[in-house]
Length: 470
Image 1 (cartoon, one colour):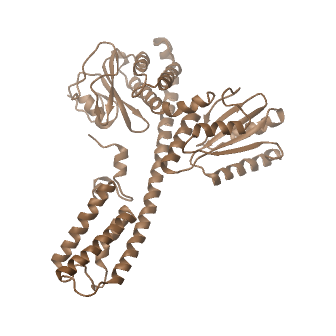
Image 2 (cartoon, one colour):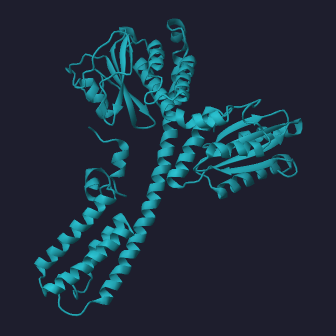
């Protein structure tokens, strides 16, 4: 099976790509690195002994050649592996000295200088390894946001083009279909169903929207398909795991049909289409096998619609459990805000990257309406806003991804400068309350509840509650 995009990225070094990069700098765990340390150092010392039997440590040759391999290991795997290579080289000196192959007194300055060089290289490798891991974590979060944005953009584009046909041929609209899919995943997550939550209800909705007559949904275990279907529509049929469309879908993780790129024109298959159920950018959780559908419905637009609906459902399944705890604690918290808040809490727990929530609280009167509207219009593109109000106060909660305390201070200074330039006032003069919350790694629901309490608004029963991306 083909490697996923994430596995390919993990196997590439900085500045290199492709097969050669994975051979020269493969992604390995700690145990494999230790094995590579022992094997490579033993082979290097044995080779040096064969070439220079009276000077296997290559002393006095004008350059400390013996420290090249320990330095490379320290750069690749960090300080701990580098120190291990130093210890192996030290043990090699005693072995060679006992054999009579390395004469003279113990070279203290040679080993002291080499140890310092390896420690510096190891420190460099540790620092940049940590930075690379943090950058990958940030990129994974941004990939999820980009994937969701791409799907939403496609839904917006096709909804207008297909509105007339949907009204004539189908009893539900695209918006109704998406609402039903979201309701299915959220309801099943609350009830505690695992795996492909709400698969039967989802398949009924998708079959009605895309005019499927016979189809089955199969879960995936890694890169393989579990042969037992979790949901069916229409006549039953057995899964042929060796079918051309099934193999093509699993290998490419793309929609497979007879006109797909990469398939032979004379390929034999018993299915009409096979669609992957992808959560996020490249997480395969299932495949939908379509055996029969109306000929007039077998169009590129309808198949793309099928893919988008499956991706929307998969994202809902992947994120429902993360958002359910927040929405249980705060029933008025909108789904987009709860989703990104849960993602950023997980990001803080896994990598330590900070994000923040800023709450600006306004009194309910006409004098502050213009200030409130101006603050809403000035949010950043990456932020998620949640306006919430009660009978006496109105607050704007802004979730700021990848923003620490310094970024929050800069944001507040920018907002206050804008209010001063537009209205000649600031937070203190206009009695605007400012409350901040670093997104915690644990107990994120309780922290958000306390923030709303400090902001003097009730997030459980708001008068106005909506989230919007910039």
